[in-house]
Image (tube, rainbow, N blue to C red; front, side, top):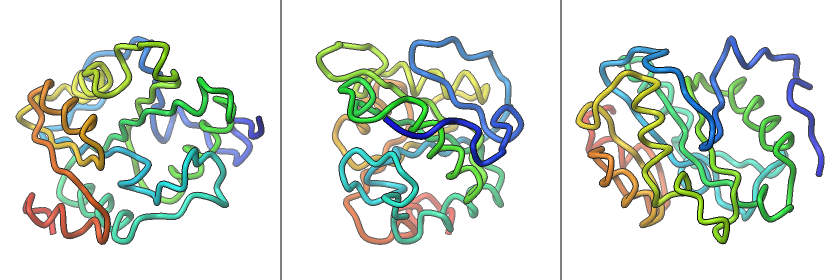
Length: 185
């Protein structure tokens, strides 16, 4: 268990908001007419299995460019991620937060909602549960039809669908190809 939040000197309250699935999110904190939601492992970064260190975080081809382009065309940007490695004791919550702090230095993200629970905890926030997607919509003050979610697993697609959010499955390659279909190229 390594990593302490804040070690890069970034005040996360000023850059992006990070919320656990079992916490409350203030309503309509960051109003956005359009919202892009992205799973993390397998969509934004190569899923090497329980990625919690900067050295192991390898951006998916085109991922940074997609997030930058979404920002340029006025999307609020959120990351919705199951992080069962925390619940399984593979890494600490502090290590995850530290990595997300580094991600915020790489790209402009407004919100990260994460579920730190292992699957056996039966948390309703864990995808395919809809809670994390609903929390993001609440944060942005957006309806489901104003958002899309890009995920690599069926659980991502199911969570988006349950929340009335347009879902796009990413099966690898260049992330720019998926968002081209959204008209954000």
